[in-house]
Image (tube, rainbow, N blue to C red; front, side, top):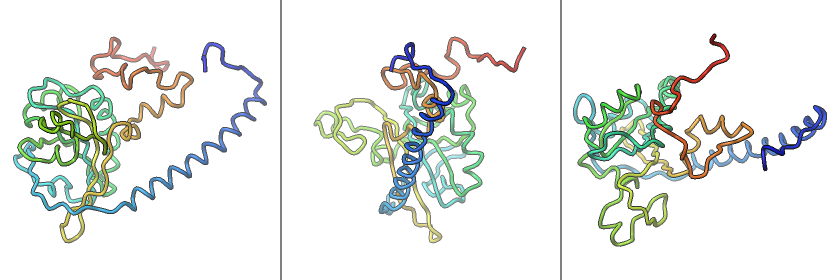
Length: 243
């Protein structure tokens, strides 16, 4: 719909249209709850491989990333070896993590970012962005490959590489995703869920705000307008509350 020629009506007509739309919103909410329940009911896969990560204090096992909690969410952050800065899209999403983590950490959920680059290589970027969340390296283990966010060169060459559960012609060195794990009282770890591509939209709070506005996301290619938060031309947004 052309926003310049948008219909303008009386308050009474608006309320009628809004109530009709509310019926659809409530139906969507019920469908979303149903989908979430279906997601939780998915079968699990036991993790037997001994993945090792590198953090600020040295080597970590997958179990260490839980931080004493039973649930672990890992954001697969696109940051490859030799990169100077992280993917703008991953950074856009990651700008939302610290706020959520203040609450998730108190509700039996650990949220950790994992990248393929050596640990020391993404620390300057993390400091630049001002992030506080845990971010570790999977360098030297199969973690990124096993969870579908790094493509092996031979698979790309053979045309057998997959991303988001289907074949892909992408030759990207790294790709974004999110994986969820559960650890039981016996210490066994299970992979419960992974999502990729637009399945990550749910984690981007700014998009949820934009979806409520007249112009919506107002983008051609996904995230084409997004920059690292210190790279916007006007880094200090104006506020009606400041003189």
